[in-house]
Length: 428
Ligand code: GLU
Image (tube, rainbow, N blue to C red; front, side):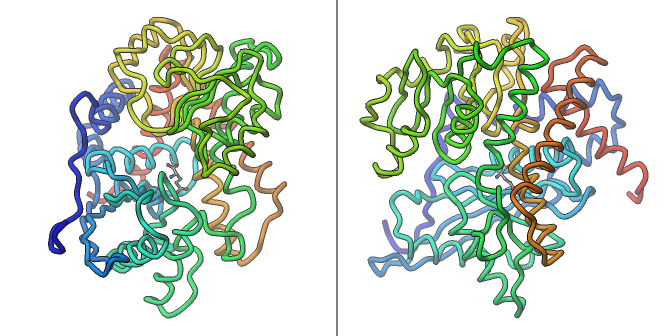
């Protein structure tokens, strides 16, 4: 690649629904139910701010490559914007816009004082050295130093990023303001002011909201089987915590393929295997290989898509056998699949509720940084579990009140909160 070209691979949009359109079509339904006024609708429809940056990075071979990065602030009426940063070769602006809006709804559903944002860099971190990723992360932070801030916009990990990248971001931002500023980012390593319980928080919230939905559906733990798509942070922690509760995990998958065991996979062994084999399950003896697509339609009671967007579509929704879908990923179900799933009587705990445990504990991390006081793990998990169960109950009651799906009910709860805040604050 010539040194002056911007590293940018076109997103494979064919055959993929646009997540922004998926988000907007649910937003429209919920806005109608609420009778949202046109002014507030128009404000919420558009992101407050979108920043595109180009980050020159000296690669290990001495050549400079320019990476394209984004930060989209969807809304800040509830508080500083919050949301992760995604490193992936398929990142594109509409996706980041959808993810930013989902953060607004997510924070509103769990009632934490944040707006929504998301960031991303088009890159393939699996082919980059740690040094290249560090230089790119620091460049991105510098480019966005006036956007980020502990009371302005607070990033966190997402796909392709973790505590290591958050540490670099925190360090670079701290240098620009001339003081250590831990509250500018969450998902940090523990020694840098990270929170106990943050790593497993998203998976824990998925497990807690799954159990809450199972209780409503009269499903017993010992009779329930699960298939989980994705074995990264969210998928593996969901699997581990569900396994510990006694649910039977019959299928898991990762980038290397899908794996099935009708008697239940020993998740402790699967995680140990993954950690010992370069983060992949390939060759794991505790299960047999299955078609990755078939995992989504496998004969299980609960399906947890915990990988990427748009994996459940109008093409496969009709074949889903699970009674309950709990969305660990953001946007795993395209809007075209919603009516098919609803007509089949499948319950869906939607992404903006099911995976909000992550941002909830991010909020606790930020509170601890601001307090300068560390909470115990028990404080974190008890408070996070309570927030998740309260939010689930609120969404569930809203779905009964309007006779709507849990997904639309979650949007109704979120949009109502944001709209009421606008009403009191006024000021357009
Ligand atoms: N990236 C995560 C999400 O999509 C976490 C965001 C955060 O903690 O701010 O919810």
